[in-house]
Length: 195
Image (tube, rainbow, N blue to C red; front, side, top):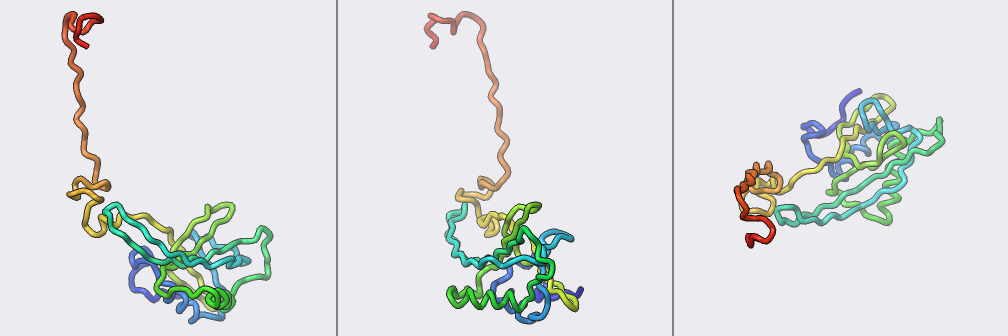
């Protein structure tokens, strides 16, 4: 298989792919069968359907108190319970679904694209398109997991505290244990007046 990834960095280091770049890459391969690999050697069944395409504007405030906003385009894939042996989606058919969606919902070309998929052996999740590969008949999108991050630390800031050492993401400082000291005698017996 030859690599079609237009980015120079690897799939885990290049950052998320935009909807515009993803769609453009698909448009360059209309006659190939579109496959999605969700784990090493595991592919979405070729009888899958694209059930919906969602556009989600996200607004958040991170742990450093900074407001962030971005848009995601999420393509949902579904495997029917009964496999359709002779059915395989070509890139051209996927693009026709995209065109139908965009007649009602213009998709932001700068949005981050994610693919949503799950089956009985793989919990439903959203993944990023990683590397692209093709051969004479197939165009494969290798999916990579979504990830969490601390945006404040990526800006070299703390999580809402004055210093990075006191950050919620910094290692927890070791707490000093208190030693219980007891006194000899009758000082704290009931009726002694110490309490």
